[in-house]
Image: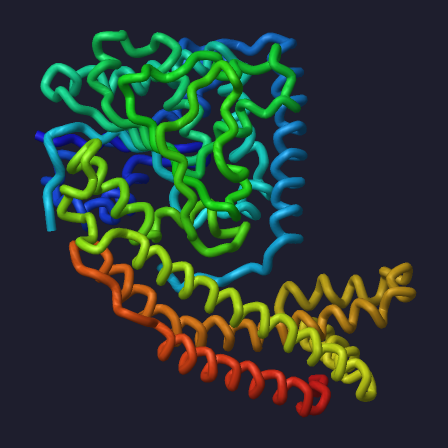
Amino acid sequence: MTHVVWVHGIGDHKAGYSDPWRMAFDRYLKLPPDSYVEVLWETVMDAPAGTRARAMPTQRELADEEAVREELRAIIVARESAMRAAAAPATPAAPDTRGRDGDVVAWPAPRGTRGFGDWLLHADEYLGDFVKYLVNRSIRTSVKERFKERLQPLIADNPGISVVAHSWGTVVAYDALCSGAVLPADLAKVQTFVTFGSALNNAWDRRLIPARTCRLRESLPTTMHWINVWSAYDPVAGGELRTPSYIRPPDEDIEVTNWMNVILDHGGYFVNREEFWSRIAQELESPGARPRSRFFPERGEEGWRARRRDRVLTLVTWRVVAILAFAAGVIVRIRTSDRLRADGEAVWAWLMTLPIVGGVVTFIDQHALWLVWGERLGARLLGIGFWLTVLGAAYVGISWLAFASWHDNAGQRSTGRGHPPASQRAIIIVSSIAMFFAIAVGIAVMIQAPALRRP
């Protein structure tokens, strides 16, 4: 019987964390509930220092953790900034068969929609666990032991195993498969290794001091088919995989289109049916012979991939137009009697009337005299925040109505052997005209509306 073993990436995880990913994967491989097993290794990171699972770190390891954490933060923030400068963001819509007899060991993303901003604001939760794994031998050994404990009982009964790793978990998976944690005879039964949104580029980054990290110095066995999936807007992956000269590169390095958004692309693989889920299902059902899979389109994959790119680019265009139109509205509202400042002052006055918050606002208003010099700027920023909240909510709602059903329907149709529609041009034109009209109406309301009234 096929088993799917889920092992999480970094973050705060509890029992049952894999349920959303099981449901997404089950659209393709409809397996009995007891076919799914999850591995919870977060407890290694949560264990008190000095226990068997987590030995007391040395002073050198503590210093290395701090240094490597700052190095990684600088690397990824710089990468995210470069991606933002190169492209405009996009806003996504809210997000029959059985596989072959082989196990799937998957390392999914953290629960929920964890984007770049989430782990940047909670660095110790997101970067901290990863850094501890890189520099702390005791933690590294304990985490790999959790992987081995769940994998070992399955090997005897199943000749074919596929390991599917996401995010920072790709480093854990790669290390476990190459460091001797799994015996060579057992390792030979792992036929496929899939990494997506991989953090391996970060583990191999030359800006990290080699002596401070494990650095993954061994190659995968040549008998293991390695597929790496990445998005150009995923700041954790950092583009195509750049393996050191002593590491064999992946057999397939596949770029996909998620949302073209540096905030959302790292988790976007999980809602990318055309390029990710279908691709994995094909490989697991027919390893080395994907065209034979029931999930492989009879006319090839490029048609579905191209139409997904067209839809996402349409979404990007709507967002760019909305941002530019909002900026124009802000300028006009400032230049006409500075109504934007009056809006902000009215918002400040309304905040004073709220329970609890009002007391804090009133105290600041009466005692923070050093803020007087920035009063005009602060009022304008509050005004911008007000209109951004109102118009942003309207934009999200309208764009969801225009995009969600279209995008979801196309994704569902791509899960079988069928071929995509000949063209999406008509729906792109009609939906874009509707969106541009809605944006124009919203900005016109912003420009024409009188200044907000104070209470």
